Image (tube, rainbow, N blue to C red; front, side, top):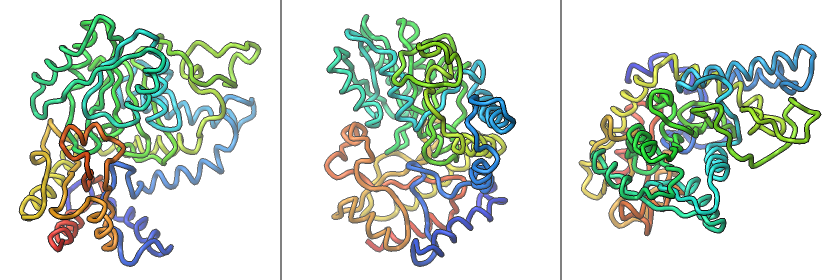
Length: 405
């Protein structure tokens, strides 16, 4: 067992709870953490349960103690997230339903007819579908290649894709399918040279690799709360590099501030948070963020990457297995391993593993662009992704199961 897991035995009770509730025969091996991390830390479970009792009032909507305390708890989460990502202040942290919503807010709140966007060839549909919708409004985009393990070549591809009309560069920091990392810090410097801004999709990297938007120059950081930050589903984050950078709003409504005005407030985060926010999700997310910070993203990245490399090596010894990247290692990858089994569709392999109570993700992973890049668009891949709670014997069980195919 790796060192990061020594004090986490209680979290495996979540597996047992799943099984005792009829979720499967025997103990589940969960390797779909790129979709949603599971199990969650016990601190997160306690936080979301306690939030319903202690923080049951709308924040900022009342002068009574519970409303005030709820507002303070939400602010504390903004403060901790701002500190984690090197944002100028808590006001730069905007909460929403998910990372997809944050990406939509940036793209649709920034781009106007005639604008041009550059994206990578690894993007999730959370980026590509909004861009396709924006084409109907006169926005155009170009796709630039991320060259695995060659940042200079990647920058050259992006530089050639930039035009005088380029206003925004949107890039995933790490592929959700193949774990390939893009040099977003260098891409930020590049696009700023041309007067453009950068929006980073950190759905697969937030909480796994260290990110500091103040040092890197990232203008917009979009995060999923339920993945590497170990929060619950239904909470996403947009972190603004500049609180004075005003995006057009997608939704207008009550914010609990400036109620006499019929205009949406100008200042973040209220400008982008119309309606009641997901307080239990935010409270629990703060516990997840603190869990990550206590362990240290650097430690998490190092040890999760070692687990992914161990899995890659084990699968590479099986003659019927095809892998699509080199062994995951820093700084080129995040801990994700995609593979296929000769003579089987990815879904068939996934169903087989599911019957053995091993949870993996199969198919196109909502990222057809990444599959076209790697030549797997016809049938997708089997994806295994680890978390801080993954144990080596679980990976051994996966390798044994695949060897039987």
